[in-house]
Image (cartoon, one colour):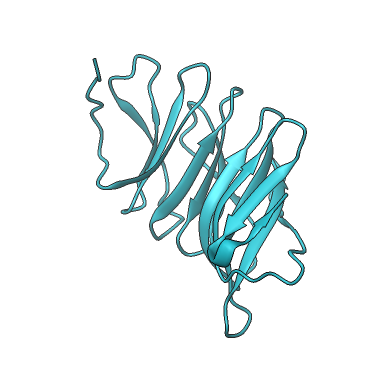
Length: 168
């Protein structure tokens, strides 16, 4: 039977659940929270230094979380702690559409990069606790939007986007 979770959220845009039952949610009004272990309430994360809609969240079994915003911002957060750590993103990264994090704390972000028109897809690796993105050369990308990213425990990533774009 589903349990109702109380909290201060609006339209939830992304959820993630690890194997320990720890959850992370993000909504369209810049609200992020951990779902408590009893699954009945949320522990809000302080997001006042960030803005925009939270497009994507991810959490691994160590309780390490990754959050991506609609304005190109990203942050790490640890389960039970309310203060996220900002990741330095490129100012021309206009939208993070997907984030993923593996058991070792290696993350992958994907989105839209706009140094000039037309916009192009963007992807980067990041390691938990390191506040710098490491961009991935996507080559002759045919996508102007990365829709989803995934990373496994071997550090292998999968990046997919518009126009049938897929890279491993």
